[in-house]
Length: 130
Image 1 (cartoon, helix red, strand yellow):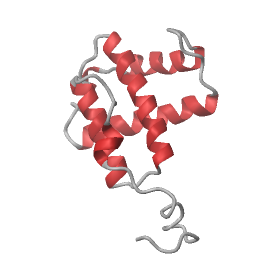
Image 2: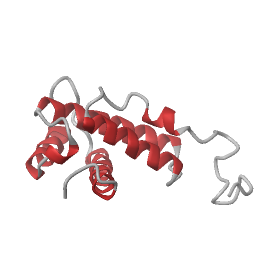
Image 3: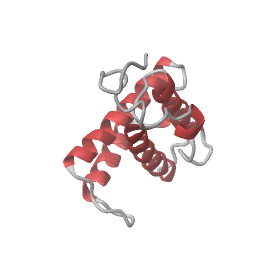
Image 4: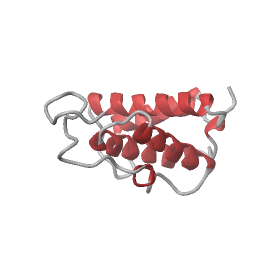
């Protein structure tokens, strides 16, 4: 890995160190089983997938918001979340509310990618019933 700063593998490596799994998972939520799944997923993305710091920051923000919304809906574990819960979250992203501005279509799409990835990871790792 590494390479020169001009090669795809080394691009950005000289400018910023890779974040630790601990820092990428930090502040992902409040301590529920869903929050634990979010932290594990962010750690996986940082260590095993090598996502860029900015991408991890965006995913962390999106998934923190997702966990807060699901917690407010009474969903403390990822296996309790239904398709309707996910749909309601996405509608909320586009419409705004609760002191938050609506997200652009692109930002909402990125949040959906993060949420889908979280659920796939949770199923694969046995964190949610399938």
